Length: 379
Image 1 (tube, rainbow, N blue to C red):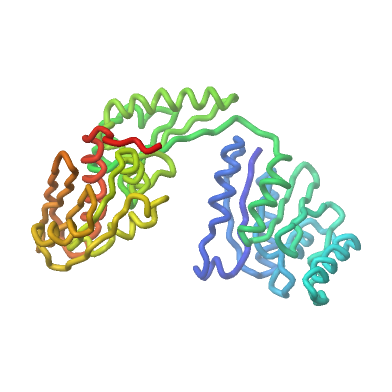
Image 2: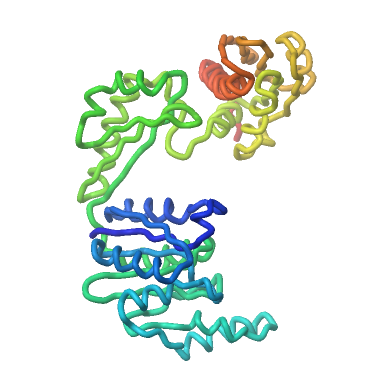
């Protein structure tokens, strides 16, 4: 099955909102082994939206559209689908009654313009929307299918997961695993994985990201278990070559990895920052259950290691991370009850220094904690 995603809304083209729907739906299709070959974004213009649907129908078996199902004049998805198929929309009495009941339950009278949300065309069925006023459309004609859903993620996501996804036939299962690395560049990673990167199955690809280098392993098989086994085999090989640099997988964050290590040991962490200017504290504070293991942070711009150490010890934590200031170089320090590790870094500008101190400091802390056997395992 060939699938295509369409995102409808002028605000997307203006950069006023980020299209998270397309990323979510592409991932869900991939998990079912359905190939998403095209994505389109079109504004709130009937002519252009109609042409976009016609193009999609000419090359795709499944078209999944989000946005443009509201009650206002610039919500034109229903009109565009009807025009592309040459059908005429009409108000469905049952849908209209449901809409009026929805408003009445909230002590409101339904505006007449909301009646367009009760439209259907002959080849469409309504997709229930318990989280809003806009039902989706499930259109099937001539072997092709159009699914139109609201653009609001809290309405679209349950509609997709409960009303659409269970009705899709699965193709070959596509599975993937992402390894996250720090302390090594993308070109060096690719060099060490040379023949794996050239392999057609499973595929191995490298990506430079804000939190280091990602290595994605992907495989497609009739049975998901077979794809998982192939990915696990390649993951073991990659770890045998690059294991010292691997800090996490998939949805892991550095803060969460560090938090787990601290919790396992029964320790709390304090951070004293100068070069990183509070960036490390912000990253750690966003981690799950940070209040259990993060004692707090001190930021002293222009401070050296000794001054930071004195300030950090006042926070009363077992583990201390220091990021001293410097003009073009610094020496980061991670101190636990049993060891201290230092890491010199060089940088080109204050902004570059902050970025390097953030990532290098968190990685230094992760590595230092990894050298310590757990002292206390919480119940």
